[in-house]
Image 1 (cartoon, chains in turn orange, purple):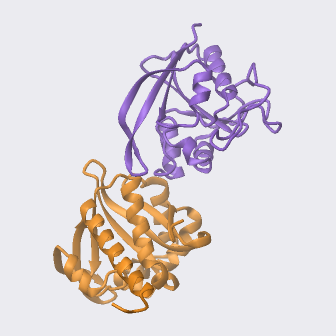
Image 2 (cartoon, helix red, strand yellow):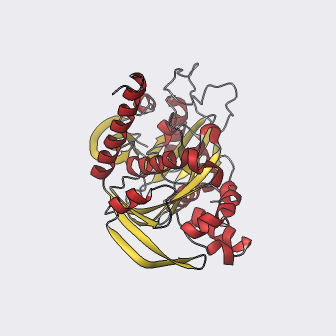
Length: 192
Length: 180
């Protein structure tokens, strides 16, 4: 059983996601729309996404053990024919350390295995190192775009890159190799 | 569609015992709790019922997929494509009339028990004058025995017709006639 599972975003999830939209780091790292938008308008937007926009913008709820909501993912700029989309995340503050990486993996796995997406476009604002470290961001970005967004009173630089299936496979191999090395070190009592 | 009342009579012949087993899916038809008449669902009710049913029985149900489509989108497709979904016990049955050949219906079931599907075919023959029935099921579907028991025979395979769980899947096309 994976640590994080993914299901369709429903109306019952709206209050939790609305609270996330109002959270300070979410606003700095993604967008600060929640500051200047009324509760009613935020709820209406999310209801519309569920009821009317599933073909063009798909929201998911990320769940931890026992079904607890740990965050949300959403895909936009969906090109079904080219099998390409943009993937975004918002993990609830109390789950960021424990579930962040697993949430990213779960979302990638679903959109590849079930939605048949082959290329995922990632955008991360450069100051945001919650899910991708500064070093990894510098290594993976294909485009660095200054003045990309204005959030919480500051212009932000964004990093963009795409993940193909080969990229995901290579990264997963690298993660598996690191895990094996760590396990081997533990088994050997730290002797190299 | 706003009706929620019965549209399909009870099966004319219900087997004494429904198939059992892990992979046979909801039985329907011979369960003591089974109602005597199927219930026609609204698109919203149908979408919710398909979402709640085991995915191994519902993926590809008349081209719908509750894993990748939320209930709102399922309901919209059901309405737009004039799909009728009925609940009979635990089984869900579906049909849509081929607009190019109004006496042909595409049908689907979530049950390995043939009785609910047989009742649906009887209803469509009696009330829609349907004489030709087509079913499309993904490879490995547990509902194949119900279709075969109702006289469906394979007439083709659509290679790579569906994508789910990480790979393209074949879809088996089956057909049966009931001359009126």
